[in-house]
Length: 350
Ligand code: PHE
Image (cartoon, rainbow, N blue to C red):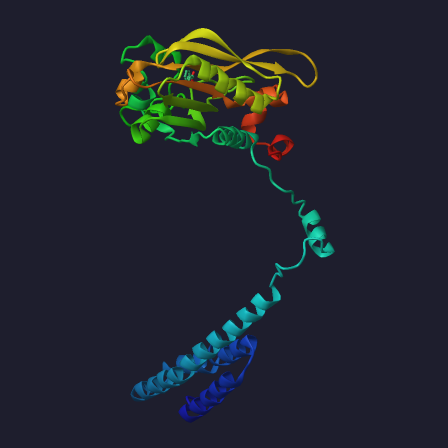
């Protein structure tokens, strides 16, 4: 039997209860009493089909009006109670970041999580050491892009298009025409000369790329530090003196530089540079660290500088090599893999 008055009265009562409740569970129970499977409204709507056709429209109106009474109240109360719950939850999960780290509960938490402090990668630390040395003698630190224009990587450095020396470096060519992953840090020489002009004293530690397989002494991604000094009247003696001072800073007072004749298209004369290195464990010897020379007049001309007035020197050295030497590291894999146990051993010094 469809009793409109009773339905309206019930819904009014439950709407009042819904307004007063302070519990989401109770609110949901009220909703079920009205709209659950056996709820008052649910049963009443099922009954409509059984009414005489002329009564159906009136009954339908009653149901939609009671829905319009209850639903907005339900939504409003639900929203209010949910926000209260959320606030309670946030308050209960609050972390006191001002607790001192010596606090035993914090220590035991970190122990349980087996948390450990990270370490900086030793190559990064070395790059900063190198930069600090050059800044300490008044040079500036320069940088350039790793995806480099072929012109800067080769042409500006006096490698002609068919220069056999292009083959000396196993190059990754970019998909974009005339780009390479820079094979050395020397393109920064040309960039800096063009951007800053002369006189110029710069060092540039950075990442370089060659198509080598990773093995115990090679890696396709490695690091170099470039040095460039251009001024009036610089000679090879200035190059040798700078390298001596740099090697002493890197490897200790007994270290010194030795130059052996070599060839690079962008320096003339060119040399390989060796360092005299004394092992902590005993024993000493000359170890090759990179290339150097007096900047070729064609490089200065490419960068708009008159080689009749200015001259200077450049050098480039491998940083992985330096790190291996300094710490007696035997295998390149250790440097490349980024294992925290390795980084912690050498990456915490400064
Ligand atoms: N760019 C050269 C290399 O990667 C090293 C170098 C730098 C040589 C500067 C001379 C002058 O092999």
